[in-house]
Amino acid sequence: MQMIDNYLNSLESYLPDEMKQDIRDEFEASIYEQFEERQEQLNRDLTQDEQEELLVKIGHPMQVAARYLPNQKLIGESYFPAYKKALELAILIIFSIKILLTLPTIISNGHIILNSFVLFWSLIDTAIWVFAYVTLIFYLMERFGFDLKYLYSFSAKDLRASSPKLSLSRVETVFELLFLVLFLGWWNNLFSWLPTGSYTIPFMDVSLSPEWQAVFWSVNIVLGLDVLNCLYKLACGSYNRITLIVGIVLDIASVVILFQISKFSKFVAIAVSDLAKLDWAKIEPIININVYIILAVILAITLWDMVTSAKKLRYFKGNTQG
Image (cartoon, helix red, strand yellow):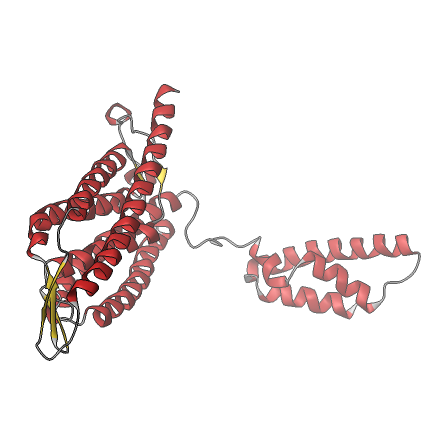
């Protein structure tokens, strides 16, 4: 049958010379046997469409040939766990170095949003190159028979009992980290395009009231520790008792700061020009209401985070007792 010959010829084209004849003979016998069985069931010769259907079920010649060929996996199963860990560490180290080297430039020149997008695409480009290099290294290690004992050598005596872990979303943690860094930059007047000192509006100069100085350092300390906690979570790739307890303590500190802010007698100071006919007595309550709403939203988010962290701690307690 011409269709079978074409299939077998195609199969041979994907095989090395020393394997072609043996595998062709094997598959030729198997295909004719299946055709004959099907013809006996139907009690007639197969049509062209029925022949094609049977060949399609066997699989594409390239796919069939791959079953007989070595090295059909870029990274073999034995090497893959070490490869995956090496890839994660390489990306984490390179990203950390790149961000630390770039962050001062981003903060100093004032074009925060634009440079953040540039950094984002630069990190994607870097990740592709890191993936390529690490994959190539492990591919060559496997092909040249690098001894696995050097990859997985360990001492059973040195193994330490590790606490249970809960996986986290790195994407959410990165966004949380980015928000904290940007807020700290704004809070410390590092961004030239968004100063904390004052905002010039026609006929008015709006600035934060002096009372905010009372929480300046406490906000810096709490959010700075929160940044470190996020970095630690990213490095671990999971939650653990330390990150959860630290998170709860920082949430409690944040609630205390929010309560302190809510006691301010004045949130903003406005110097109004004589040309502006504004009734400050009517405007100030509106500003205060908006600030209270913002504080309430932040408080709700903080309490929610505290509750979810406490629930996660129960997981560790249950595992310890188990």
